Length: 161
Length: 180
Image (cartoon, one colour):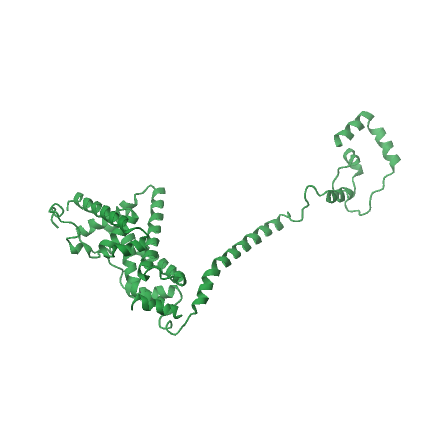
């Protein structure tokens, strides 16, 4: 091609050769194109002429498919969330304001919050014994009087409060 | 087979038969349209498959508000433009020049069968912005009417003519710089 091609007021419209497609497709590609695309959507050539698909069914499928996919996604997310909560045992845990739960726990001795438990480990409740512990009030008062001064008792009491 | 006959087949419930005729009639044309947009055969093949999957899924929603062939071209063009956009974003993150990449790809492509002027023309086209490139390819190579390109691209005929004019001048300028 001459170097002065464009200078001679020619443009790309004047050369029909330029409009020719300069690309090639790989050997056999175009010949098998139809078959490959039809198989992509599940059509087997030669069988398509016998098969009649009801258009309304296709329409419903197109309309309902996104909703179905969305519902499945929510289901999966909900299932995963529920699974995580179950695994971490968060579901059955009471709220911080559930007084009756904590009252029961304190009563059973699983939470040591009483004044007496805080001052001596010897009085610890036996977790394996279902029976409520029995304390002699007089014995406890006597024991406390020998172990602590009035000031110390008052201090422990207010700290506990 | 005429497009109206294909639509008629589809309406009569022969969906698969109608689709087969669409692939038979437009498969190769759409392949070349996509191929000239993205250059690489493997990319063109992927986009063509995506295009026909979309056509298959969207056929029930085809309302004949546009011609069948402009509708098909619109899907193919949109798929190609999306691909080019993604490619440009990827190139930006890897500090590469997508135009230069495409130009060097054409030079080394064993499936390129043109002379030096055709090579320069393809390299010039590769420098055009994607939408301008698609307008240029449809008008210059496929000689599609502006009215139909307008339907395909969703752009007014006036804007298309201006776009083609800009593209044409850029290509001429590129070729001049190349010494033609």
